[in-house]
Length: 208
Ligand SMILES: [Zn+2]
Image (cartoon, rainbow, N blue to C red):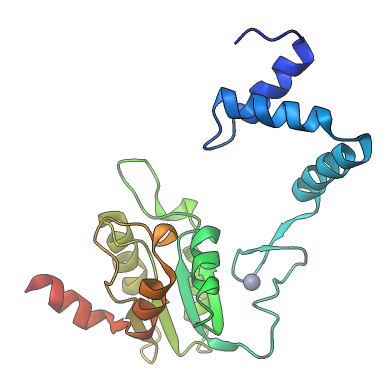
């Protein structure tokens, strides 16, 4: 792409680094910004700067938060004896959008994957196990993507739970095997949460 300005080229390159943005779209965004007044562009750049500098990860669930503890973990109206384990913040957002779940989360930051070199130490698994073994949790809902890696991760975590009283459940497989939570429609996702199964039943069903 031959552009008349080095500054413009640089800006286009930066936009084109973002997911789903090709060079042409990047150029359209840059041209759009150029048409805006200085104040709007400053608001835009300030939002990005503040995002990176001001945002924290909740020390309890690893959700994105403006405070040390996120708005979900600090909400007294939520049930803090149930933990829903998800892979990413996008999955948390997907479940929150259903308005069906009123308890806590725990974001792993990925799943165990020997092929991609992701082992348990790189994920928030130790912090989850610690939380589950405090005796304060009644139920843990495994809401990982239905993939081999997701299943491996659930298996690994459940083997480390020493508190015998915790109910371990998985979300129902309304979602196709190999699919992704993030792209599932709200109804399927809400139903999957409502009809979650005890992990033992899920294992039996897979063996049938
Ligand atoms: Zn939190």
